[in-house]
Structure formats: structure tokens, C-alpha cells
Length: 523
Image 1 (cartoon, helix red, strand yellow):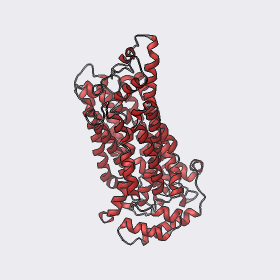
Image 2: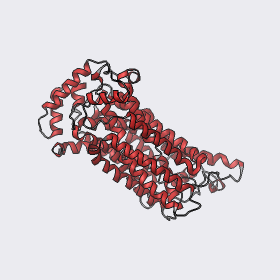
Image 3: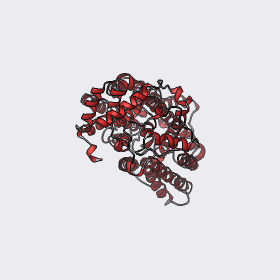
Image 4: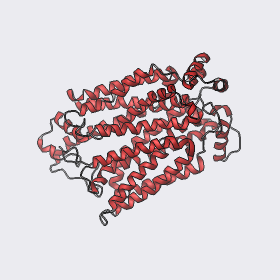
């Protein structure tokens, strides 16, 4: 297996996942300087001093001591001293909400076009074009302090979301197509590893004594341009996807050159033969649209499984864990809860790295089930800890342990696996459409959770994680009964597994329509 790891492959994968790193950076960068930016919004909007006393249940000028959520055990909002004071603080709250959510809206829109752009321009050129959006968004945010900050930040976040929506489809597709079969799972998991690394880096440099201060927060937001510039330069030295060159463009010689660069000059005859067979089968079928994914019986089952995997990832409660973490750490008596939150980010990164090594040994389905089962148990302990927090002080520590374990189990399976497993379900023809639908589902679920979680937490209080536990259990059972193992399996084996899971012994209408990524080696 290690003989398939070449310098060119490492360089190419590193370059590609720089986009994933920036994806993670953009996710996490807005959190650390939240109170600093809100305070700046008030300054820009010229909020009178009386209005600065209360806003969104938080004190104003503190950046380090403020929780990211209201106190855990309090679901009653702070009352405004005067009825007329609702207007301007309400405007500030709305602008901050737009600053956060515009990112998800941009991602939802662009996620539909990642696969199309990759097919239209090629994987390399598509990522280069996407970086234009990244640079535009970073520049707007980087210079936001010099103009109407709220407008520039909301616009910049929205444009960065467009970039990340494209990348969420392009990167898994590209690295899945250049990876050797035996390393496909491990290399696919690097997309998620780069994302959580970006989140961790943004948390660290967002500390108030680094770039999260009143003077430097705009530089923190604009720093997302650094990986974009670096990736744009390095992409000129990366080979195009051999599958794109051969199957989409019918450029066999270019595909051979690309493969030889990636494989270190090894014999690529077998790879070319497999791609030739895949191309012949792909040309015999009609182009697959998003509508056909849901209407063609050959695709219906794998599309359903793909969407459920992404829904399981987002509805598992992982975002809620991050949403509550600072408050829980404060309740435990930590004077600097921001460092504990960074600790959660570090655990996030370590266990994602661990999954890279486990995914080809334990298998995709097995790791997903292990992760979901562990998250279910942790969610129960989290709820118990929060409910009994007032009666037993040590319960706060149980909640802390549950947070770390919940994040660990998430990154072992449900975090990285859905992104690359979808690519393993579909051949060259339907793969771009399938990845677009899956990415849109992921972004939409992300947006729904971000929008609804505060209301759910207010309504359910500490029992909110019991709700997530029930959701996780339901997705765990679905995975057990409906999701096949794809580790090292050929298309015929995967298609047979889907028919078995779906309760059908009938061969698919067009068996070639879901051909495996190409190199079909059995484990």
C-alpha cells in the first residue's frame, strides 16, 4: 500500500485540501471575535450609550469572559429596561445573525454547481475559479473596518460561503479520482481532517492576544486569503484528474501522463484499461441529471443512503455541542473557557487524523456505526449531567468528559465518512450530480441546525441532548439496516449490497450506471 504513496500524490492531495482547510477556517473564524465585532457594529451604527448596556443577553465590552450562548439553565431572556430600546439592539442582533448565516446561504447556493463546474472546466481550473470568490470574500472582510463593516462582512461571508459550497463538492471529487483504490478511503478522509484543522487554527489565532483583538479582528477575517493564494500557485503544478481527462475529454495520452505522475512512473496499463471500460459504459448511458437521480431506480437507493449519511452528520448534535461548550466549561469553574473550547477543537483534529488510518482497516460502515453508537451514549450522559447540574456540582465534569468523547466519536466516523462515501456509490456519469445533491443536503441541514438550535435549547433546556440522542439512534438503526460496506469492493459487489439492503434480488436496470470509481480491487 505504501508503495502507492508518491511525492506527486502527496503534493497534489495537500494542495487540494488547502481548500478544505480554508473551508474550516471560514467556519470557525467568526466565533472567537464575536463580541468584538458586535461592539464594532454598535460603534458603526452609532448606538447611544444607554443601548450598549444590554444586547442579546450579553455584556458588551467583554470578549474573553462571554459565553457563546446564554447560561445553560436559564431559558428566560433578559428584559429590556425600556420598550424603545428594542429597536437598535435588535438591529445589531439581526446584523450579527446575518454575518453568521450568510455563509451557510452562500454554501447552499454554490453546492449545486461544484460538480457542474468541475465537469465544465476540469477539476484544476474549477478550483482556481473558486479561489477568485475566496479572495473576493477575504478582501471584503479584511477591509471591513474601513467602511460600513456590517455590510462588508455580511457580503464577504456570503461570497466565502459560495467558495466553500463549490469546494465541498470539488475537493472530494478530485482527491477521490486521483487516489489509488487501496488508499481511497484514507485520502478521502483528509478532506474532513483539513476542515477541522482549519477550525482549530482559526480558534487559536482568534484569541484576543493574537488577532482577535479590537485592533486586529479584521485581519483575522481577511487571513482566509492566505491559503487561497497558496493553493492558486500550487495548483499550476498539480496533474489534472486522469478520469476527467480520459472519460470526459477522451484524452488517453494526457490521462496516461497524469497517472504516471501520480503513480511515480509505475505501470498504469491496468488503470487505463479500467478507465477505458468505464468510459465505454459511460458513453452508452444518457447524461444523468439531478432529477434522474431520484427517478431512476438504479440510483434511488444509493441517493437515499447518501442523503441520510449527510443528514446524520449534521443532525447528530455536533453543532449543538460546540454551541454549548463554552457555557458548560464556565459552569465547571474554568476561568478561561476559551482554552477548553480550543481543546475540543484539538480533540476534533486528533481523532479525525485517527480515522484516516482506521478507515481502510475497519471499513466505512463499521466506523460510522461505532461513531454514531458512541455519540448516542455520550448524548445521554450529557443530558444527565446538565439536568443534575444544580444538584451535584461534579455533574459539570461529567458533561465536560461527554463533550470530548462525543467529538471524538463524531470524528472517527460520522464526520469524514459521508463526504467521500458518496463518491464511492456512483460512477463518472452520475457522480457530479450526486455530490451536488449531497453537498446541498449537508449545507441545508447545517443551516437548519444553526437557525433552530437556539430555539430548541430555549424550549427543551438541558433535555435538548435527549432529543439529539433519539435522532442519533434513529440514524444508527438506518445505517445498520440500509448502508452497505464499500471498503475495497467492486461496483458489482456494491450494487448487490444495495439490492440486498433494499430487499430486491433484481439486477439494476443499468448495472454499469453505478460503476465503482474505477480501480475495483477486492480487499
